[in-house]
Length: 457
Image (cartoon, rainbow, N blue to C red; front, side, top):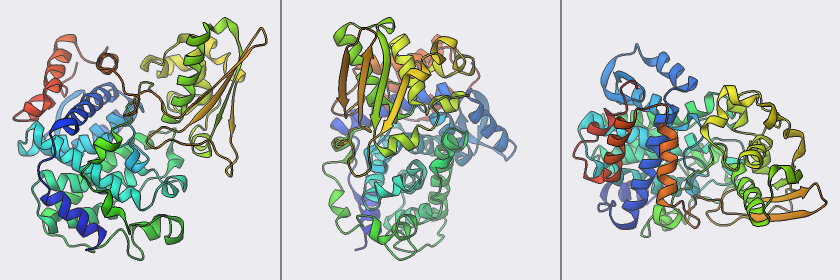
């Protein structure tokens, strides 16, 4: 069978997936993304996305921060934008991008539309991660380095298959959904630092639902969209520049991708390319008892991917600040932590923070001699902290906090959730949402939870 047929067969016919460690990790991912969605609800990108579609018709699906209900695809668009608006959502090894910000908004909206429960959503979510890993295996990391925003290009294909599984489509139906998802694959990293970046996650969620709906309606599509000439691999990276799908079927579980790689949960609310460096600086400060008053300069050394992503040494907006190594390290030195409040418009001009920007240097390692990467790590970083009294401390980090091999504790996970909902949702309603999330798989109807965070605070 072709790789797409093999993947479709697995997604349509494999036994239920939401149990054991896979269930625990998927539930934690849902806790994380719901917090991010609530926090991103008031963001300007989310509100403008809602304004663009609010008059296109009512529907059964809730959106964050508003009492309006939209069609499931349009709710997925708004909620997906909210989930990624603050760049606080998880990353995923399988697509070299963000995964849950595309998958969860699509599946939650579809579940609310059709009255599905928590276990069904987690089952489809786990299958979507599997699909993203298989699709990504044939093109990455060259596809990402080429400039494609893999959150959407790979994400929409995997999420289309996941939505088709949740909708109960057969093998042919899932195969059509995957192929039609390929027809929606788009998004360039040139949009980083603008509202279009979080919009990509919402667009991927919406288009994934539409692909599944088209497939359910019987719209036909090419059987093999991934490996054929003019297919995904050929057009989006080229046959000679990618590993191809010859052995990609071997990547299908067991063990499941979520068990092998987990999700790279963010503890810092900015681009993941800063995280190893931020953790490195914080570790050096803690180990040697350094304060901001002790430090003279900091140098960070990163690979080309991180250097390309972190485009704003002197950010002028909150969106740019999320893609600034200099801003992230300045916050770490001054405050010892990066909080959502640090990326609000009124915080960007803080003179104390901006005074540090010229003292932070980011250098790119030569392409032919990169920093070594760890499987399932984050973008690695080497940091050198120079003190005013002439000392120098160095650290190298490949796995920032939040990856499977260096996970957040339950207390850290819920502290992040509390930071996300603070000031956005009243304490009583937040407690209700938390209760739903703690036992998400027991929900008979996901709509019972969705209604809790859709109403205005």
